Image 1 (cartoon, rainbow, N blue to C red):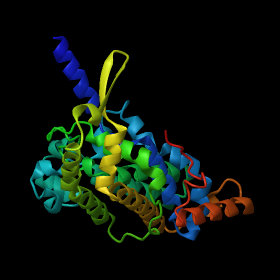
Image 2 (cartoon, rainbow, N blue to C red):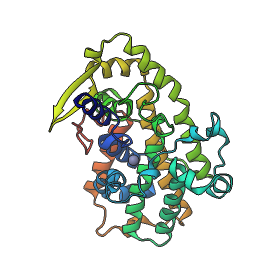
Image 3 (cartoon, helix red, strand yellow):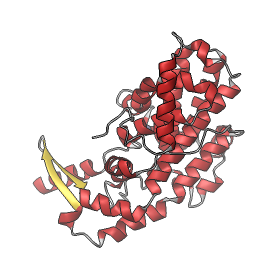
Image 4 (cartoon, protein in one colour):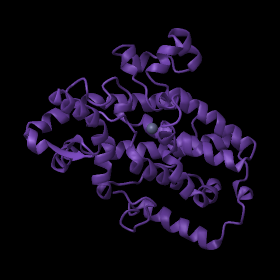
Length: 326
Ligand SMILES: [Zn+2]
């Protein structure tokens, strides 16, 4: 019995439900997105940057109180067949005509929920509602960022089907936390998305494409480790936790090359592109008029400095990231 309990608690600790980039990653990506916005949007988003960064993780926190929340963060698209990522109808109307809504909901809604959030943010711009613009910008960013995590697009979301338990938090939390100082956080400017629905499906396809490599490289790196060096076992409050060791994470990061960094950059670019698209589709309201107090010269100067540091990949070096990690 004890052995069973021990094994059970190990499994539970290893397969802790997915967070999507971890709190740190979401907050960093949300901040980076602000720097990729066009001039007309910069002052408003910079003024509210701290709010956006803090609220970047709110949808994950909401899962504790709202049972409908969890399925909005992923899509286990391979449940629908080996090539479903290319064959799934992109629109909700077409997808729900092909599959029962219960089934679609069970295996995750992230691309469709992004479209719902995009529509709400567009409406918020039309209504010039500051509160709603901020609320939906933060939430929309979170779901777009989750869609960039390869393990958010598969039934094997924690490596649990291939004996790689704990891979989820290793890839999306431990690797960015451990390696961010070495990442280039520069990415492309926001682009107008003529077809946002298609754009978010392209994101899901891009994430899904990384999976075979992501899984195979973990197996390959494992060959250089023993069970003792690969994992760290800790006990907290009577629970045994088994996590990947720092040494394993380092070797895995080297094997992956720029994969995590590139998904972060793409997530920031796409978050900014969706915000920009919603603003354009919402009639390009003058955002400076929506500020409670005028944007000062000092603030504009500060933004210029931050943006310059972002362009040079020096945000970390100059200590300009609002969130400091672990
Ligand atoms: Zn999430």
